[in-house]
Image: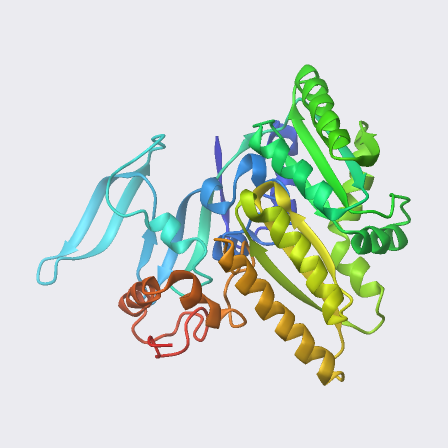
Length: 381
């Protein structure tokens, strides 16, 4: 089951149109992003643990290349092709798309373009995989005395293979900010929000096992949100984190750092990051899609405090180095852009030169979102 949309359609628009069909587009980055933007950054989010990211859910793309060619990626059967004899250049094609479950035919251009941040092509149309709306949904919030206990609960649930649709972590500062902003009354402790999708019987069994694991790791409070209204209230609080945290420091902007690490290193990485924030004297919050090892640090700041900006940037550098030392990545979902160009060689080494070769082959004049991912015309950097 799939749907074809133009790049400017937003996630919420699409799901509103799909509502009567019993189908949904499951990728939820937490914001009402456009599908084109989600493709450009290989967006993921709260539901990635069950449904995957954009590379999982985008079946084919229509894209405009730097030389003006329009390409359609994915599995197709050519019905008609017109070629200029003197150059063998294809100038007109007609395709019939077929949806084979798998293909080993040539390079995977779809996934090359997804996550390329607009540096290789302009995506104009996307065919998306759809999922069925689950028969039932059940969520809970579990609070713990220590962050370590919350993360250990998460890694145990995931390593045991218990199906979850969402597994989100919030530190006590996030919970406090969300409570104030959204008028909630969640326990002011490090917390996990866990959601299951499936049949009513499956949900009851899965939820029961997860609650038992949480109690084994010292959960102080477990509140189950069984009704649709309770779930909406819980997730609206989680989705308000950015605004809630900035609301704590009037007039501030937000600096968001994003890394991902293997499950075996997740507890270590999060606990050390929490301690680093305290040692640095920074007010910051930790929140994450810990079901896939991804977490974010959000720090409010004002431009007039240069000393604070310096400490914030130094903290971000240590965070990335810590994630890489754990075998993780400098960005789980936000992308490289400008701010993380220096970390790309640390993560990929000599493979960055290969990436740059692809970029120059497809965009020799550097007109596609120039100055992103790579330092301009400097492959040695």
